[in-house]
Amino acid sequence: MDIEIRALGHIYPGNITALRDVSLSIGPGVFALLGPNGAGKTTLMRILATLLEPTYGEVQVDGQDLFRQKALVRRQLGYLPQDFGLYGSLTVYETLDYFGLLYHLTGKEERERAIETALEQTHLTEVRKQRVGTLSGGMRQRLGLAQAMLNSPQLLIVDEPTAGLDPEERVRFRSLLAELGADRTVILSTHIVADVEAVADTLAVLHEGEVRFYGRPEQLLARIADRVWQVELDREELVAFKEQHLVTGVFRAANRMQVRLVAESLDHPRARQVSPALEDAYIWLMGGGRQDV
Ligand code: ATP
Image 1 (cartoon, rainbow, N blue to C red):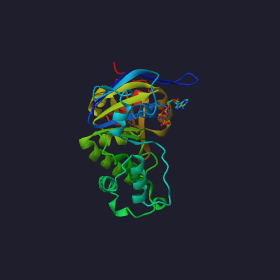
Image 2: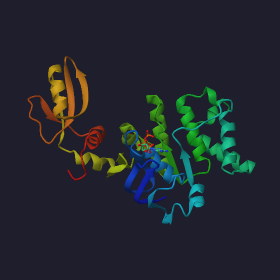
Image 3: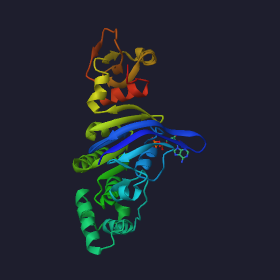
Image 4: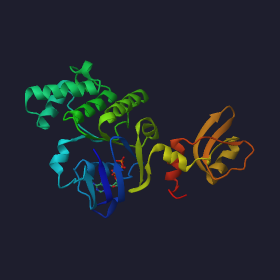
């Protein structure tokens, strides 16, 4: 599925601008929307999921206007919102059966087939009889994904699905998204750079409702090529150093500190250039780094 977002904006009552002139092209594979809290990610996802009309701009899905073709798009859409409620006393299977009815999968056989497929796709077949109240956070999120997969969507939208998961569950959830992105369009919102590193084919970085970067991860890295440094500092040097430089990481190294930073040049006897990581580029963008610098 191909999505064209053109000059999109959203203003909430009270004159709160959540999105400003957002233009993006999203194709098959995993597309990540990266940004801090309040950047506008949920607003954009709710618009793409046809739940919220934008204040201005347009969205085309496979050449058709999203809001004129709501019903058509909804049939091909799976959505996992940031907060979704589940009944703890139902089993995994019963939960999907219930969602299946909500999705108008009214034929019993058709619904059973859809549930079996969704269970397999999310690796939940073995816990189908388990009560939802006893599931781990990661399993609950996978169940959320399973409900979003019930209608075999060509477009899967998942809003901050890895927040609150422990590291192992997060890795597992990401691999699942990569698998699902092999034959559909997946839009993932996150504030975790490692999520993007692991699965995104393309990304957009949102900041205060505006797109600060749009492209492939390696294109973002290229923006700061030759500008990432690592320097070993004494503890006393650290405070002043942080005030003067865009520091992207601080690590303890014996009795000194290893500091990463982004700068045009760095004059320090213990400084060396290192290859950029996505985290460096993201902090640089948030710190004011611009596409044209
Ligand atoms: P988070 O991860 O915290 O959900 P986000 O990147 O998803 O952040 P949004 O939830 O889209 O960001 O919010 C963008 C901006 O719009 C924020 O300033 C937020 O306070 C504001 N906002 C969101 N929903 C509403 C609403 N219903 N009414 C008024 N302002 C809102």
